Length: 291
Ligand code: CAA
Image (cartoon, rainbow, N blue to C red; front, side, top):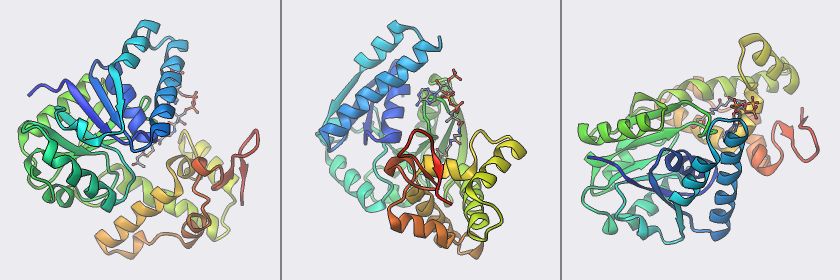
């Protein structure tokens, strides 16, 4: 089946990036959030990020204007019902995702493919509570969405081939690369990335290095574009902790135990860039390490 209209649930960090790339690739986008302020902020950010691409000569001003015109917003979740493809990119809490799917299901068209941008929750379990496990799968973008080349596509146990093929075609049309992942905790990228970030926090916790030396070591010694602690702040420390807990619970192996220092930062509400404080303090002109 051909996908033309895409509904996106959640206008946060991931949702606005997904709307940006879909609209730029020519899809009609309906972006939903419970907050009108979040929708307004998302549209302003999409325009700013498109502008950045125009300034760097990546896209034309005409493409920017067309992309913006293709995105409509709504606070009414059920208006997404007739879309060909829905990507849920709401808060990474299973109960919230379940509520969204429950509310959507009575309004979905028969052909609608339902997907989640979850970074670690079981696709099979989410799918099992919907009316269409065969038309349900994981559609996982990386942050920042307009820049990162990869999209993980995760099949639940019941996902059928036409659903996978339709989603793969969308990724191809975005000019991005799909990685096919099986539905096990945290899939591929986060299964590998989060233990590395968690180990960086242990390295800090045990005093092997400070924030600066750990990040410099991985940037200059392993050619990572961001150090692991800087990246953790960028992703959100609450998200990092949630994913470590999914790995720990789902694989029942102590090697995935979250570092107590990561838990402490989250309990303090120091969640990284989004709260202006994490392993760095972002309240001034330049980020200052907090350890
Ligand atoms: N929208 C559009 N373009 C953007 C952008 C955005 N939001 N953010 C950055 N860019 C573009 C810039 O315009 C620039 O483009 P050109 O190369 O054409 O000049 C390019 O990206 C680089 O940007 P900057 O020069 O401003 O900054 P930088 O060189 O420091 O790179 C970065 C920024 C791309 C974020 C880089 O630091 C990086 O790759 N970091 C690692 C990101 C990463 O690992 N992401 C995955 C996180 S894990 C995840 O997402 C999974 C999960 O479930 C948690």
